[in-house]
Image (cartoon, rainbow, N blue to C red):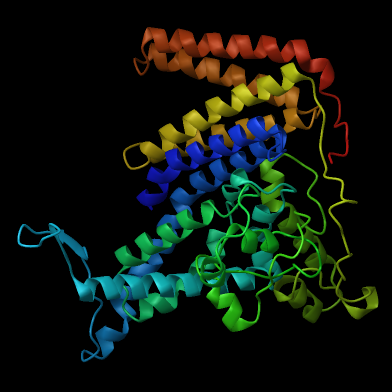
Length: 437
């Protein structure tokens, strides 16, 4: 998964380029509160991924080691591993390409993409899986920040779709590398700044046009274009839909919150509430494993999504003063910095420190979401968080864990932030809702 971690600078470079394009052309591609929410969910996903990815890769490796087809039928050949390109002075180009390795890696990449297609498709068809995946769709914008808007819980369910690859003996290292490359590819297709590509590209590959359809809530676009890299899977399995007009983005029941914790659990909460209140075990089963929007006939049956149009659509938004928004942005940037530090040191940091740091970042992002909602509860949460951080800096300095300059800088940042928040506290009363066209 280091491929994804090393790709983070590229992600932010492209994201800044998209923001720059907005400033240059005047075309609205981002909103600060929505993009901060997107990135907050991406941060939480990366932190939770320390555990979920370890679990998924560990299970895959165990199955591949103990239950692979080659273990039971020795005549079945293994998958050629290793680099398919090596340096060679004997070659006119200075490199040699190993055909068996190249074919092996290509086949694994295709199989990973096929497994992703079915994992993704069923995450739109099974309510329990949708409860995790809904996070990625709950933004009402469509830009590169949305690509990083990922669930912290979805990975607990989707690893099972890749086990067939372990059963046919694909080495876990190849699986991990191809899976990461698959996700990296999908980053750039989350944009409205790119129109349709050439006909061959649009026929074979998943493109921004195809993926815009996937994020649309228009009835004709719902549950379409599930591909990761190759749109051919949708064409083969009957889920392809071309982009005919610009979609309306989001989910049929809007989230209406910038809180990343609520974004991760709101559908799980709703599913749990319905399961508890169900009148039969069949209804409970359907609430968990039936399609999203399912309801028993006595309650009207499965919900029919309404028609929506871009012209009539009003995106949910909250308006807060510029100084309060600036406070939220500064706190978010520091939370991202803390996250990068945790991710870079995940292998070396003691578990208790890693867990404590992740918990602190989670609380910070929840508070920042509350600030952008102008929520009353954000002020005491933020004040308590900053005071705890100042106290932690002081304790670490006393114990010799921090230098004097770092300690003073940390305490000063907390005091300035608390003072800044205090000057804006009168605005933290409740969200002021306003349509954004």
